[in-house]
Image (cartoon, rainbow, N blue to C red):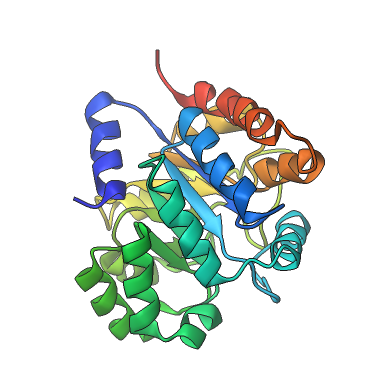
Length: 266
């Protein structure tokens, strides 16, 4: 069974909510990414999203844009990142999702990239700017490789399209709780419960909610009406602040554990 499917099955059996952590790959460098992955696993993260650095990250706010710039500056490429993931697999079995813009996949070659990702130990791919309606070949290759196709649902997604998107998904559905780009927010979206109810009418896949969660109270609020929460910018901000320090993995791990503990039952 795919690691993502297994993790969510284990969480469901235990009556627990999941924690998905996003970091920018290669920020501040790939050696740090490997150490951060292990530290986040130890902190209780259930799924690790690795943002593949790209020059035009249109879905991302300033914090994650700057992370992508640092990743590019450190020399991170998709090929080098897959090598790093293979190294992570020697130390951790945390489920890994690539958060990636489709141009990077297209440049390598669709079939070649998916095969290489599976060989390295990737469990799922979230191709941000690939429309589901144009993803038939992508999904066929993903299924054959045993990888989960993670799709996004937004607050503005009509219910008919929610149904078509969720029918294509595997692993989990990523619900973007706010319009716009990634980034920390002072409060959670007011229509969160309403939208997760709509999504649940069309799928039995776990629903992970992201965009804007930055503290334990927000984490608890979002976890109350979702199967998992996704935290990105708040973690990336910690990496930006402490990236030059030798204890970066420990600092980030300690911060993330406060959020993980907020949604986990004793």
